[in-house]
Image (cartoon, rainbow, N blue to C red; front, side):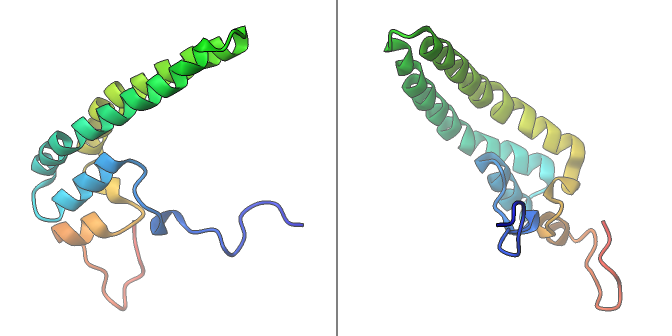
Amino acid sequence: MTVGPGWHTPSVADTAPPDPSVGRIWEEAQRLPLAEAIIAAGAGAARGISAAGIVLALSFGAMALVPISAFRELAFVMAFGLLIDAFIVRTVLVPAIISLVGYRSGWPGKRLRAARGTWTPRPHEPDRV
């Protein structure tokens, strides 16, 4: 039995964006400049991300009702971590990092690069990063 990635493991370029707000930003960046795309996508995704974070934090927080100290500790850590993720990481840090990195945030895919026309590969040119 082999352990590790095999032929069936998808590459990073074939997978979906890691965050729903990132996917919305990439979609908006195909028709808007990146700064405007971050604002437009952030406004639409923030409500859904916040609601999902609250629901997940409450569901993990319900584990605190179990009268075992390990469950209470795990419930607190998971609920607190989810709230940090929902309200700080995904609503503040992800858009900030995308604005700092710019169109390279779409790497290794070519969705943003091709959308903005910064570089289009030619048949005789090797793919460059």
